[in-house]
Length: 392
Image 1 (cartoon, rainbow, N blue to C red):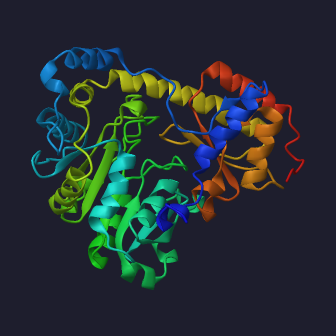
Image 2 (image 1 turned 180 degrees about the vertical axis):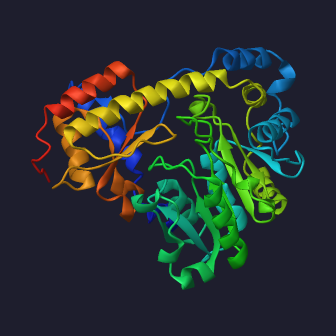
């Protein structure tokens, strides 16, 4: 007799949880493990945000339930951010919703918008939670192929027409995880056109929208004219303001979808702790100097590791954003065999590319979330390994 549902029993193991278990075992054995696996920023949350949280936490009224859709202050700050950053106007009552991090929001969006058996186009390679969220909502996933030949823009002509005809929703993720790919306006223009022609709900996960380098500014899908007729976009303060554990984000766009998600969420949660929302509002209304400072640090780390990889014969493209470096494994290795070699012989954790879909095979992802000094240690350890020797 089992008390576990089929949908949970049939879930594949969450690789990042398994990696953390391996890390714990190695550390217990005395290994100095350097973790470049999970994309959790190591830089501190800016002081003004922490101070705002402390201030608001002392107000008794803030310990009551939030409005289901999020506090007015937070929703207005999101709208302010979109106007300032993208020149996009949002109705705070109908086109903005607070979520408990974009991961939660995307998972619940599937329950709010698809029916059992509905098809969802999911990026490959892509964040594995997308496919999991579709599965838990009873849907089916079809791969939306991405590859390095065109900068990881969607390869729509590689998707069979039957899958497009059956699809109800298409997921995009720019700036992207794991590939660190960035989009231009034309990328979203094509996505909106395809979605309109095929009556798809278009969802862009923009969790890394503020982490950009070299003068690049990430666009919003809502900048495309009339995109709100069929699109929503998720944002998060986790990466841009180093607030991963705070669990605060938002979704904006199509009011029918926002309403459906708000209705679904109102039956399972009561939004986020009010002082967190108020601190997040202060972050979104700030001058972003703290974000720019941290972006400089991420770029310096990326440049250092990119240069080292080049010397080691490891191929990677310099990204314009995110906290990741996406690189090809050396000849003779699979994604998993290379990750295992780094882990067991070098004490370095990277994420094998096949964890992100079949098109991730042959790659590995590095999170730029340790100090420059620790990256020096990584470079030394990798240079001491025989990267031409295949280990199974």
